[in-house]
Image 1 (tube, helix red, strand yellow):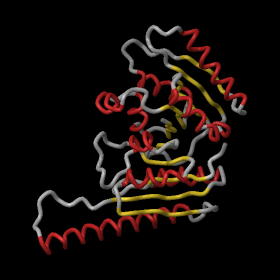
Image 2 (tube, rainbow, N blue to C red):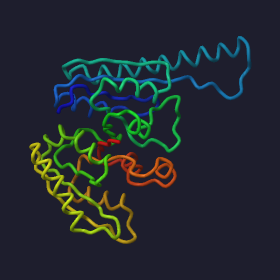
Image 3 (cartoon, rainbow, N blue to C red):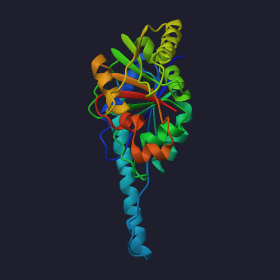
Amino acid sequence: MTYATVMVSLALDQPNEARLQVAGELAERFEAAIIGVAAAQFAPPLYFADGTEAQALIDEGEASVKRRLADLEAQFRAATKNRGGHVEWRNAMDFPTRFVLAQARCADIVVSGGRSPAFSDAFSLASPKDLVLQAGRPLLVVPDRVNWLDLRNVLVAWKDAPEARRAVADALPMLRKARDVTIVEIPEQGNDRSAVMAGVIDVAAWLGRHGVTATARVSEAARDESPAAHLEKVAGDVGAGLIVAGAYGHSRFRELILGGVTQHLVTQTARSVLLSH
């Protein structure tokens, strides 16, 4: 398995430099095509005059969106002009999430920014939370402060669930290029530690048969420590530049209201995260 096509989702009114840098590096490492995508809709104000005045306002708003999409294309092409390989741009006057989800059919991996608010502007932003749930492709979330694809130390946040299994399989191309890979499971209270460790060792052995040497680890959170906080601590301990994890082990409603590990991974600012659902 490899990544033959890397897709990068750009957003209006957000920094795009980090995701463009990482998407470009990813395309270079795997000699992949790179496709930039962006979409937005004009959001009319709740109250405005009708008739010709209203139409003029709509026309002006739509023209502004088109200009900003053209600016994003220029930024994308400037960032990828020396990357080599196939470079393509796609944009539309559409709801961003709907447009990006449709385009993801031709990608092996989608690169997006992070720090999406819980209730984001559906007219100008394809939320990474929606993309990872619906794209059917792995999502690489790149915080604004990240400036390169750091694969020196990769942390796999393991939980024996379908989402984590898919994430590890989706991450195989990057894991093969990593210097050190650590697989960690944070057991829930009452779990048999030896059984948990046996499962993590199984994953390490599976990776080994795919050419990836990985260290198996079980790390228990303190009684008053959340799994997200403990995972962040482990990531810091191993110097992880990338975390690989399954997304949304709980219901979407619970994640949206209460947060959780997935919410933390999408919004943290220290390192890139590969998520699969």
